[in-house]
Image (tube, rainbow, N blue to C red; front, side, top):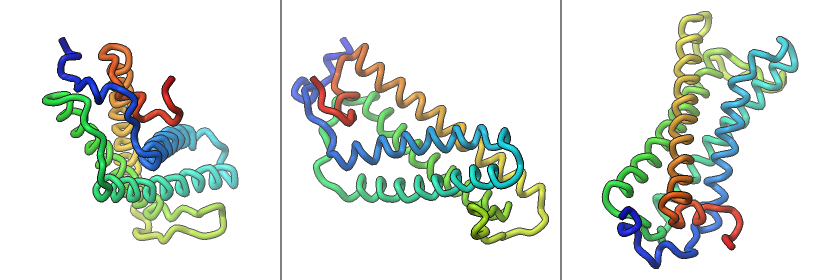
Length: 186
């Protein structure tokens, strides 16, 4: 059965390092918040409220970029990765999914920075993002569309990632989800 490919000792209560857990859930909250703001920005009335809402989106996007850099440095440099719960295709799919998520998030943040720059956005009406290209509305729309597409792709892959964690928890009954929970399992 599927459970036969799970190492029995690894199924028990080994958890990720607290730093890994915090970075994971911080990333999840930032991605969900950014996507929600991105979907609702155009519903806010033009003026200071929309400027502040867009500014919050930009600040949270910069925060996500910083968190991603920290996560990647942490993932690449730290020792003591947890032993894999599975071997073969499940392990390959899990690793590929994580790297696809990182790439998509970095692309989304980069496109978001480019979007703010070509738009010349103001941050809380205090300072303007340096405006790289003046007057090219087609470029503004194209970069905005790419940013939105990348953000949607992040949400789709993150949803698949979440669904896989639930599959592991409910169907395979392994510790995949419990290893990443912020609170200790019962």
